[in-house]
Amino acid sequence: MEQQYFSRRNHAIDLLRAMVMVLMVFVNDLWRITDYPRRLGHAAAGEDFLGLADIVFPCFLFVAGMSIPYALEGRYAKGKSTTSTLSHILTRSFALIVMGVFLVNTESGMSPDALLSAPVYKLLLLSAFFLIWNYRSKTWLEIIGLALLVFLGFVLKDRAGCCMSARWWGILGLIGWSYLFCAVTYLFTRARLKYILMVWGALVLVNMLLTPLRDGFSTSESGLLFGLPKTNILGDFTDALHLGNGHTQLLTMSGVLLSVVSMKLDRKRVHTKALAAVGAVILLLLATWFTRRWWIIDKIGGTLPWVLISSAISVGMYGLLSWLVSIGKSGLLNFVKPAGTATLTCYMMPHLLYSLMTIFGFSTPAWMNGGILGIFNSICFSLLCVLLTWIFGKAGLKLKI
Image 1: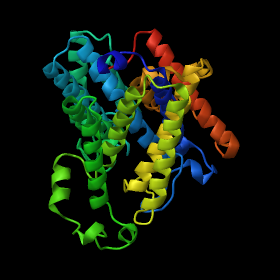
Image 2: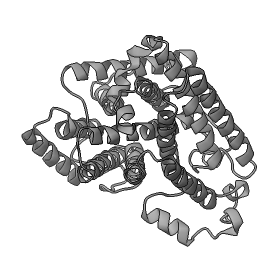
Image 3: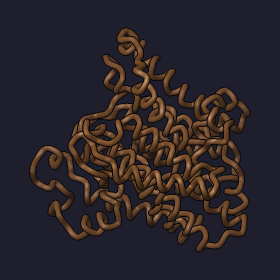
Image 4: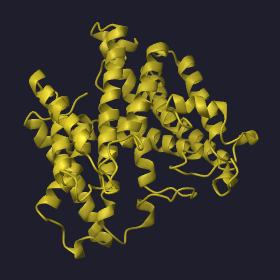
């Protein structure tokens, strides 16, 4: 039953992934504009606040988790072995981590005495990515791409004079580590709900134990539950596994959980599925309200209330999109679908455009960069990235790992 269900294309997941990707491009473009509502941006570290930008990344992790059963069961349906599937997981995770590390090393710009300027470096980096991971790439192109990537790794020198290093993993790197944990976990659990719930519950417990309580965000004390010291054996263990306090894995595993529950409800009537979705959202919101007694809503801290409210939003969005697909009304959203079927390509489009804008000295007039016009500017930029993703796809350029 699992292979039969997960072998079908889930258009609601594609649309959810597309919408989240477009929102990610939009909030990441807010640096270009001024005087926009605070609710669109990020909360400060340690601030009990939730902006639109604080919701996008967790929703992306959630939908990445939803895709895991489809991807892995799809491989089994094609006759792939567990060993082959594990190799695929490792390769995919490694690719995301590598891309994440390279991109994060370019964030601060390049040193004036670096061999390459920042925009030229970024264009060459994107070229290397497409040479290696384009879905139509040939072996000789992959070799050229790898050589270019190694070269770029050696010549990097940022504004602080630092060379290539894993400062933090970047968005793609965090997704890579989270995908690795959750996909390998699914290899063992498959679609057995009780085991997935056990892993999900363990991650909730890890997050509760390793996230500072409300007072802990504003003091030098550890502020952990039960008075645990800031440095403890559980934290050392999770750090060794690149789990941190488990919030990224918890969000991704929540997506896995929703896909498996959806599979269990597949033969139920539409209104039963709708009631289940509404019930799940209500429970998650109640859990958010309850846990806020002990933890703040904070993306940077990866707190449990932030995970829960982000999961509630993700479940609600997926439920709505599933309903639209079931009644044949999802076509209105097809214009963003390239961002959901070529998501990694779409993620690279802003890097491409910013680099080209810098090289050619192009920028939008100041009067277009503030307030309502600035927001409209960023919306248009996001849709341009979707259009370019579609054009790239038609030209045979699509990142696939």
